[in-house]
Length: 132
Image: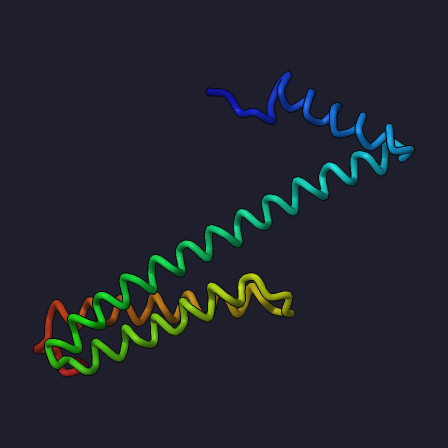
């Protein structure tokens, strides 16, 4: 299956969008800017949606691991999972907020979450480690 934006399909979509805007009395430059602006907005929203889905998945995995850890009496691993869950929940919300430095905030939250989960997994695999 081909890319719907390449070849004839893409050309037709662009020309149709241009015709609609031209019919409204706008010039071709405005028409092109409007089309690419909408395309960029759609791509941006899709990326935000993917980050939100990933955060939800990681939060649910962390919740499951935390419940197992706390049931086992392992406070360190359970606490690491809770930190990871908190980072993922905040990340899933922040990605939709118009704040300066959002990429840095989301990257730091994701890095903290993944680091906590990785450390928890290593501790759960080898509880004899002095760090666990």
